Length: 407
Length: 96
Image 1: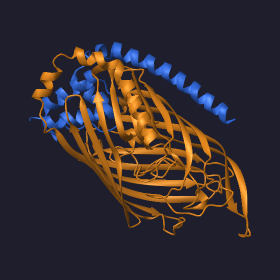
Image 2 (image 1 turned 90 degrees about the vertical axis):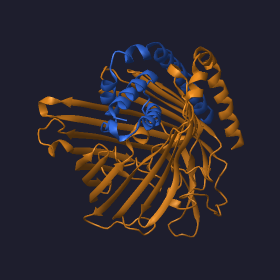
Image 3 (image 1 turned 60 degrees about the vertical axis):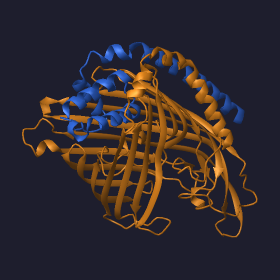
Image 4 (image 1 turned 180 degrees about the vertical axis):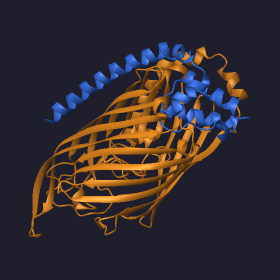
């Protein structure tokens, strides 16, 4: 870990060096700083409360809990503009699902803004990989009452990074490039079925990978009115095997043949698209949001119990994952009726293809549709229906209701 | 095999660095020129609705818009000039 911090510190110094002239050019920055109010701290946040009901069967997961139930979340956010150019933000994620309460740090980072040269961000920040994790995941923003398949909290897409990020944007282009701690690869110690999963969701409390990774996203907005954004993301990771479970490290007696020093190189790629356009002809506004991604962590070797349960056998699989979704939404914002103009509908399709040969293999598609009503710009009630089709041709139908707010 | 992947990773890093430097130079050159063509109200409408419903200007006081706009500048990669115009519009329209 100390190596990681040294690398990040070194890169931070290198990053700042070319910008030293901009400090000199901002002649009035000292005066601005003197006049600045130190009280510029804002407490804000978002929250949600929802109910999910599986209609046709009550599936149980490995912990024996049903998938139906109430979920509640609250994410208080602290924003502190320390000086005109220096900014701190942090978010705490509090969640209650299946009667269990979890609390973790969503992000906490310091940002230095260098006028038109962009910003440098250090700490834990939302991953700029694709757009869903960084911009669309809060439920008051997400049109649907749940995440697309594979993009959920324990899913297969990077969610946050611990490291350093440089970013900038203009009307037509934006980019983010970052150096961060790589994710761990699950040994399967907590649940043997998870052996080889890349653990994108980590609280960075006790289980940090000290191997560096890097990534970037480039976004292009070809039209002046920003109606369309197309992005491409790439992330390179040095995946170290780690014993991971929710919130910490487990003590586990590993099999003698398991190579815990193995380091796997992972690459993950994504393309994303966002289109939103006012169409007075149909008295409304349409939105299309899409993201597709592919990850490759090479051939992985693990050990499992034989069918008899008496001996251990080695197995190998190619660790590739494909997930993606397309969401279409329509809001009749130009309707004459006051109630109608606050409504909206959405339709979402998604897929998730997990590694064949792994014990966590799944090949699943989803179709979701729903309706929402915005009482105010930051206050929405949603009603959704989702059908999930697995490779075994079994369907799971769910109805969800959720209220989401930002404050 | 491992070395091959590492080499590919390095090539990827070099390619990424070249692309990003090009974007960075371009953003330094054109960022301000494009922004000043639009009013704060127009930018508020365009930029905020890229992700969520447009916020009501009266939601926050002048001081709070100061911090919230900085938060959004980073989150949505909005240029300094553009976020400044959006912030000025929100502060002028909130009745604070």
